[in-house]
Each structure stands twice: as structure tokens, then as C-alpha cells.
Length: 331
Image (tube, rainbow, N blue to C red; front, top):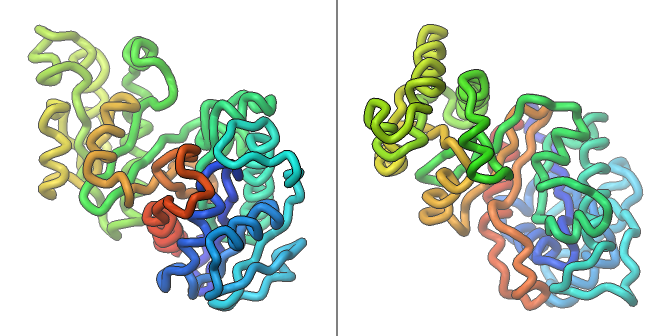
């Protein structure tokens, strides 16, 4: 990425019926974000309505049609206007196909911008999978959309918090499928992705722990043979290649050891194995990073929260951290 202090970060609006517009605006009020070059990709009317709802007076919104029209200062938040929402039909806090489509189009535009080097990294506000699918976009989530738009085959979800970092072998598939499809090659690829991503964050070679799949990491085949068949051979191969990787560490202790500082990142075998401990200790500040893409992408680690959308109650902590992390990785 560009080694430039004047990085431009593109933030997608997310599903407008959710808390995305609110947390974007609130995060821009923070000093760690306000002084950065921020461009929001979204519907200007939606963002202006959220700005009015929150009664923000510390900065104004500027509608732009291209990056060249932006004015970057702490009193101005630039909105690259994609007029996708009919405000007369818009319903906050509700699943709507129009909102799902708007979220998708914002992502597509952001990818175009980063490919053309008009922005240096992407931060995404949350989308709603049901609304996305109602709009005809059949994807499980952001990660899969971004992989499809960029032709990326090898990617993984990395969750970061102040105390714990977790990367996943599999994410949005059933638990049964995650177990059946567990393969040595995938584990090796995720270890490689973890090594590269964490090196950007901590500026050294990371110590990587690979979690076991079964209780007690299988207890030498007593509780399952996935460790013997797939996980251990992958770890041994990556060690021979020079990676600082240990395991398989029993999943009931590996996250505690990581929090205490023994490991820089944990390779989790499936979605909930990694998400539960991360959200337990860093729900408000956790950041989602898609590793393997040809650019930096971070995101909040929570959903659209329709139940509190457009009420001024949503916390911007995760969004603020996502912006800060995107800048750090891009540099």
C-alpha cells in the first residue's frame, strides 16, 4: 500500500435501515477520525437525514460526485452520493430490498475506487443479509461479496481487538460442513494469511496458535481424528517453512493464553469458535479484517442492529477502531 501520511479512507454506508449511517457520523466526531481524509460512499439524502436526527453541529456534510470534489477538513464530511433510496418509501429499522441493494452498490463503488487508487483502504458499515438477498444479491456477507468482486480465491476473516486476534478457517457455513470440509491445505493458507496480516499490525513476525477442532484437541484420536489427519500435518509443514506456529492447542484454553500474551493470533477452526471469545472481550471495539484481498478492508464486528437504528443509541466504538486500523495497515 501507499506509504503516505495523507491516506484517503473510503467508508461504505452499509444498510441504511440499520445503524451504519449513525455510527459513521458519530465516529467522525472523534478526534482520531475527524482529522483524517474520510470519504463516505452512500446516499447523501440518507446521510443528511441521519445527520439531522443526531442534531450534529460540529461538522457539515458535503455532497460530491467524485473524489476530486472532496474538501478534507474537520468541519466537512464528504459524501460520494449514490442516489439509491426513495426517502418516501424508506423505513428505518426494517428489512427492505432497496436498502439491501443500496448496501451492495456502495460496496461495488468502493471496490472500484480502491482499484483505481482513488482511496487507499475500505471500511464497511454493516449490511443485513436478509435485505441483501431480497435485493437479489445472493451472498452470505461482506467477505464473500468482496472476494467475488475482486476474483479473490484465498481469503479469511480476521477479528482484532485490543487483547485478542482471531482468524478463521471457515465462517458462514454450517458447523457440519465446516468439520467435513476441514483440510490441511486450507489450514496452511490461513496460517500464511495470518502471518502477513499480523506482521502489518505488530511490525514483526507473529506467533500463531492453531486451535484444535475437538475437545482436548482430540486427545490423540480419542475424541476425533481431524487433528491427526489434517491439523497436525499442516502445522508441521508450516513450521518447516519458518512460520512461528504452535498447536493444535485445546480450544478451551488457547484463547485465554492468547489474551495473556503467549500468542499474537489464534487460528480458529470455524465461525463460532473464534467469534464467541472475541465478542466476549471486545464486542464494542472488535474490528473485522478481510485478509487476502488486493487492498485493505476493515469493518465493524457487529450487525445492523435494527432494534435501535435511527434512535441515536448505537455505539460508534467499533467503527472508530475500524478506521484507525485501516489507516495503520495501509501505512
